[in-house]
Length: 290
Length: 163
Ligand SMILES: Cc1cc2nc3c(=O)[nH]c(=O)nc-3n(C[C@H](O)[C@H](O)[C@H](O)COP(=O)(O)OP(=O)(O)OC[C@H]3O[C@@H](n4cnc5c(N)ncnc54)[C@H](O)[C@@H]3O)c2cc1C
Image 1 (spheres, rainbow over the protein chains, first blue to last red):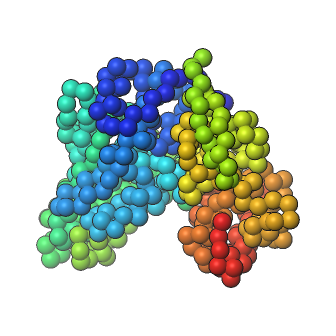
Image 2: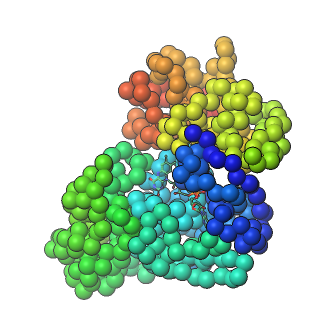
Image 3: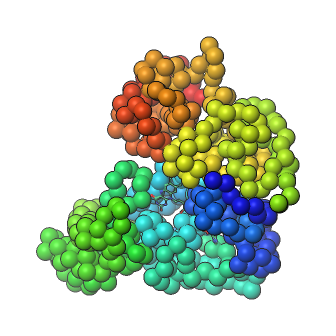
């Protein structure tokens, strides 16, 4: 099918984009990489009156690593996955990005678009939750900083961003020196949306786990896994703690049934993938969340 | 109906001015306004890969871009890769190794294959399968496509050139 008609603006600065958002409000949609929005336009699942194309706003595309990692919302997924600064600070990010669609999708798709679109099976919302990231949302009225969990809550295919807000930056705090990470997902084919997946970041003092952050995707919404995290805190790394975390993850996970798999199957997957992600994290040592 | 906009599409080395509605996808503009029907449209939601083109040298889905977004960019379609007796090694290999049957997916496969080899001059069959998982073929069963890309990679590396 073909999109319904819309008006089109291509601002070149953030201020211009914010003015357009203020003017057009709920009738407008921001166009980032278009890898989720244009399919919806083509199928007329979305019929915005106005598209605000921010691909020409160069100041939204950057990666700055200086303690906190700051990433402009229009940074393409290919650039995110290939950045040495990102890999150095949080190697779990390129690992996750490699699972997003295909090269042609990643060449256009953006980090901000992935978060704003908030597909419950998307990798990045869950990964950034596990990394305790925050985003900045700007409107003509000002700027606010929102934690990933407050951005997503328990929503799917929408976030707590307002109609006139532009997601501008993603901020990821520096990892503790001894933190390590693991990323595991299960999809039927490489590049397909995952049936379930887990991002795990743990910090240890010797073999005792002092911090644990787990983000899951593939359920009804991206979420942290608090029962699994509690099972890990203070425990010794190893099979017993990881098995307890896997069971906790299955209890926490908002599994759902669809044509690709039952809720039961997905809960089982989350259990297994959590154990694997933790083993992967425990096997990675040295450097910030290796 | 929204106003039409004038844009210049630099396709396969020549600039062509077209007047399009903002809602027109680049794929439709390439086919309908420029008459270059080698770029195929299958699913129109980014899944099948038949509409794959190069935009400023990078593989993209032309069904997920608006024509107005490509104003001034360098676009390469299958027609710009090679035609007639002057085939690109990737096209030659698809012909020799039976990398196609009906041909519908082939333009996208060729462009995706060239992209894979440009980043990885000596890909393994497994790497080719993973990298080209975004291009769907309903005829070949993929085996011959993988062989074609491998054969083309060998030729491209000895010729020291790519697209
Ligand atoms: C074949 C295919 C396979 C895919 N596989 C995966 C996968 O495995 N995993 C995955 O996570 N994703 C996958 N995707 C989706 C892809 O990652 C998208 O790029 C991403 O979901 C949206 O990013 P975008 O930049 O393309 O946003 P767009 O499509 O441009 O926008 C998506 C939504 O976010 C809003 N938006 C975008 N940017 C902003 C902003 N800065 N501020 C406010 N609102 C904004 C838009 O208004 C729109 O509502 C796939 C897509 C395709 C076509």
